[in-house]
Amino acid sequence: MQESSKKEAKLIGIAMVVGLGLGLALYFSGYSDLVAYIKPIADIFIRLLKMVIVPLVFSSIFMAMINLGTPEALGAMGRKAVGYYFLTTVVAVLIGLIFVNIIQPGVGADLGGAGLQNLSEHMADKVSSQEGLFQTIIGVLVSAIPTNPVGSLATSEVLQIILFAMFFGVVALYHPKNSKPVVSIMRSVEHMSLALTHGVMKLAPLGIFVLMVDVMAKSGFDAIVSLSKYIVTVVAGLGCHALILLFIASWRAKKSPFQIIKDVAAPLLTAFSTSSSAATLPITMTAVEENLGVRRDTAKFVLPLGATINMDGTALYESVAAIFIAQAYGIDLSIGQQVVIFMTASLAAIGAAAIPGAGLITMSIVLGAVGLPLEGIGLILAVDRFLDMFRTTVNVFGDCVGTIVVDSMMPPESFKADSGEVEEDPVFT
Ligand code: ASP
Image (cartoon, rainbow, N blue to C red; front, side, top):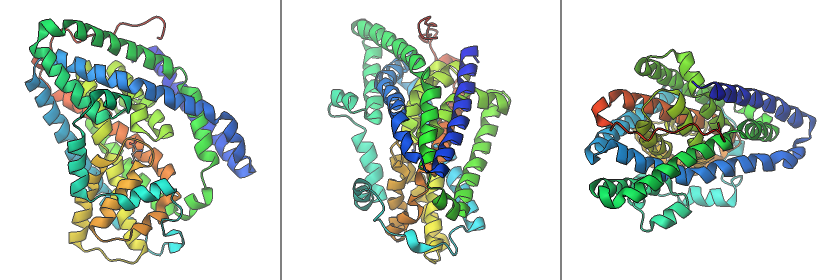
């Protein structure tokens, strides 16, 4: 791990703790409004991160394709990645179901908050118009194919960008002579995007500090206390899943768990404070490529895909939340219904966007599948932003571990010698 990354992760950690303290102080002293004066710093930080996503993802996937050398190698990597996503998501949901059935946080819960009235108009519309599971999953698959790649780039449709970069990469492989200028431009774009990410990272401690102050100052501590049993269930389940992931990572990477945590500390802390796997993606990519010791081409391919469709934390959260709502309403769920929740929560997480609050919207698929009242979402709304921080961290950790696992399963001959190494740039590092 590079010295600069270590220093960065340490600074981010300190910024987070200080931000947390200041945010709570503002909340309890009644000065939460003051956050408005510093909030633009956090907005600038998130916008800068988002600015890097499109060039970074497009050029990385394209170059991964070129370096892998054959569509077959990409196929082998894709199958391993999807297998890993599937297995870990299923384990996450199972853990959620076990914890919520043992702790039973919803039994005797106050139904006062039930209803969609507290959701913003935009969210309430989205929740009520959420399609069923089949349509959602088919919708994700069909809409992954871009009709206008420039439009996809313009609107940051990550799945569409991934697919187009893959197609473009395959074509480039089969037409090496004609694609030579594009390949060299893409290599350049990739290196520049990584360098740009390093530049944006310089703002991370400040951005994360402000994000933490903001979240804590508006935390709604009363809601957190009154839903504490539910929060403990979600966080304990996520913690248990993270431990399993850590064990897998340490085994496959042959590194100590502490070293793994140090290596990915920056993306995990960023995920925690931004609640967005997508916004964290540039930081995840640089940390994994530079610290974890996996081959760059694995990271380039597995991370953008994982950030979009692999969400262990969200899947676990949705299973706990659905059963919590059933318990609160006094609805007894049969084993059959719990199996339906198990399946829908696993799949609904795929349909969730990698942005704050997305898991709450796809919750309606899970609730609808077993006939639970949509209004139950109102019960958990007050603490959703708070829990989003934890589930997004686990989502991002799951993507990092996925890269380690897939990389450890790829034979060395799958990679061409030239993997487009990124040179250290004196301006940004
Ligand atoms: N915020 C989560 C993410 O970006 C998605 C969710 O709401 O669960 O990974």
